[in-house]
Image: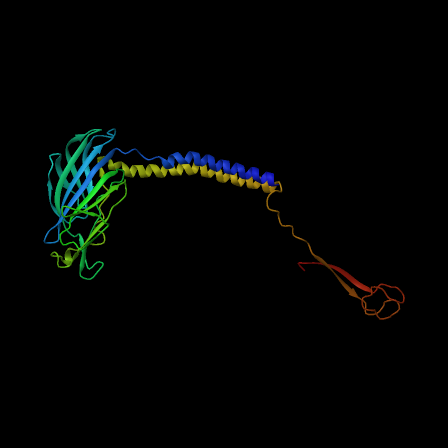
Length: 318
């Protein structure tokens, strides 16, 4: 019995291991990056009206142009409350404002191995919350754009430190600016906060950041339209994997269980016992000599005649 069970378990383990070998490549496959951002620097100065002057500097390298040259960049911004978008580099043909993101159209298509540098400025509002953590203090919260399939080698946020009372995370102070530095793997985000006294600038309650703001859209180059199709393709692949591997495994498991139990190696089947009782009715007096019946005696002690009047077999159900 033990040998039979071990053989069955070994076969099941083999099926699982084989399925895992086929599933692992599909799970671990990650589409090769077509682009890379070498430097993403945002320089921020607080205006007297508490809005922010933000200068974006991006150095974008094309790694693979098999799906087309890089002709435009979709960049997420904190919210739709911005104005005065001004290009600084000739690499920018024009910028299309889409509210929570900017479509930056380049002066030409950039091919594999080329790096394009774009730089522009804008005035951004609705970036702070009054008395958010401590009464008497106003907090700016900022999450730069992140990229779903592109790594950022170096992300730098330079925030003017004048009048700033506190900030997070920790950073260096360089030339009067808080310098937050990190790398940003694809799909990951980075958050910074800077705190000021309520009287540092002209903070206004009707220009505060709302809960759905400062959630910049993930940004991509022009090939970002493939993201949804990749998602659908992934669902189809998962469905096929389930149909190919999981369903046969379930069938094999049930088949082996049926065989093992059918041969008597599975859990023992319960055997119901049939319980019966014999109901006996006695004569009070011997039908032969009339002597009274003695307790526990089936025959008359005088004439040896049977004292049993009736005998009936009764089952447990009765």
